[in-house]
Image (cartoon, rainbow, N blue to C red; front, side):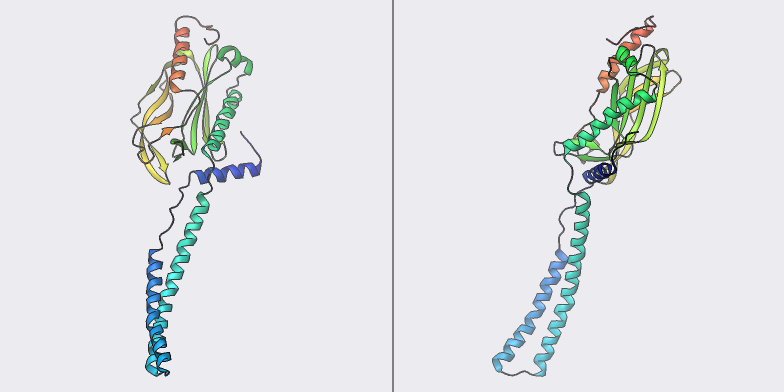
Amino acid sequence: MQTSGNDATRERFEAVRRYFTKTPTPPVYGTAVILAVCAALCTLPALVVILMGIGQRQWNSCFSCVSVLSAVAAIALAVPALLFYRRTKAKYDRDYALAEPKPSDAQIDTWHDRDCEFYEIYALKRLNLTREQVQTDNKGKPFVVVGSGPSAQVHRGTDGKLRFSSHEILVIYLTRYHLAAYKCVVDLHDGLTKTEVTHEYHYSDVVSVSTQRNQSKVTLYVEGQPQDVMVNECFTLSISNGEQISVATDFDESLKLLQGTTNFARTSPESAVTSIRTRLRQFKGGTSDTGPLS
C-alpha cells in the first residue's frame, strides 16, 4: 500500500478536498442594507428636532419624546442589521476557507499520475509476477485503463478538463501463458485504495475484449450535488464463466453542468483492446507459447 509522511498526506488531503469543494459566491447583504438604511432614516426626525430645539433655544417634552422614539427605532433596526451582516459574512468566510486556495490542475494531475505509476508496480506484487517476466512477455509495460471511481466528485479545471476525486485503475499484464489483471479504486485525496481485486485467466478462457456503450448510469457529484450520468464508453473484458471486468472510461453529454473532456490518461481503451485481441488471436490460432508481445 502506498505510504507517505503524515504532514505531506494531510497537506495533499486538504488540497484535494478544497479542489472539489465549490467556491461560494460573494454574499448579498440586501436585508442588512435595507435595515441599515431604515435605521439611518429613523435618526432624521431626532436630528430635525434637535436642530429645531437649538434654533429656538428651548427644549420641551415633545421634542424629547420624538428624539427618544427616533433613537429607539434606529437602534431596533440597526442591531438586527449588524447581526445579519456578521452572520452572513462569517458563513461566507467559513465556506470560502473550505474551498480556497485550490491546488492547480497540474498538481492534481501529478498526484493522479503518481498514483497510476505506483499501482502499475504494486500490481506485480499482488499478481505474483516478476519484472523479468513482464520485460520478456509484456515489453515491461502493462495496459492501464483508468475510469471514474464510484460516487466520485467532479470538478472542471481551468483547462476545461474534468477531474475526479477517485478512480478505478485496471492494470493488465499479458504473460506468455495467461492474462493477469489487478483492479482497484484509488482515492485521490490520499492515493490509497478503497477496494482491490486480482484476476488471472488462461487465454482460452477469455471470450472477448471490447469498448462498448453501457446503458447503465452512475452517480457523480457535481459541485457537491448528486447527478445521474449515462456511461458513454466502457472497457469490458468478458470471461467464459460469465465474469466481466469493466471500467467506465467516458460519459455521455448528460454531464451538462460541466461539459468538459475527461482526464483519465494512461492507456487508451482502444489500444488495450487492439493489443489484447492480437494476443488472443495468436494464442487461439494454435500456438501455446506465443512469445513476447509484438
